[in-house]
Length: 193
Image 1: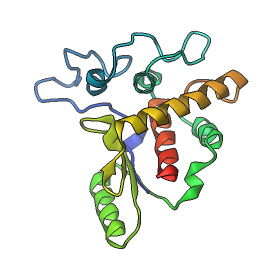
Image 2 (image 1 turned 180 degrees about the horizontal axis):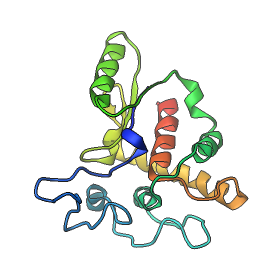
Image 3 (image 1 turned 135 degrees about the vertical axis):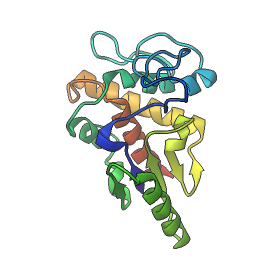
């Protein structure tokens, strides 16, 4: 498993395009947080409901829109949420060996080289990267093949089922962030694949 995360734990749903200025704010989609991902909007029906109601429980909506809506929670320091999520998923990260690549520069290149070297040596390799460039599915790759859209949707649905349970029983004090949720989905998908 190769994991490439944005420096400082930051997660951006898209990179700014030329001409957008320093904010990276495209006119058609608004700000990065609190709005829907422009790539998913084309594939998923528009649903303006929030992923989490005022009482903290997730509400019914398309699982991928709900996943993207988690971006509004920003960054939450600490490991309690991801520990609770992986425990609820049966500790998927213990089913395989992992390499985590972190730092300020060069993560993408290192991950690409490690991925190719391990695959050339006959290993099965899962790769979870952040941020994605054009589609959420490109974050999740096994042996060079991206997760299928429906598999990602199913993974998000299963995760939200666990999140609802953890929130209602008090194991989670708040919903996971987008990055925590996508990380949990990746870890679980790698175990299944």
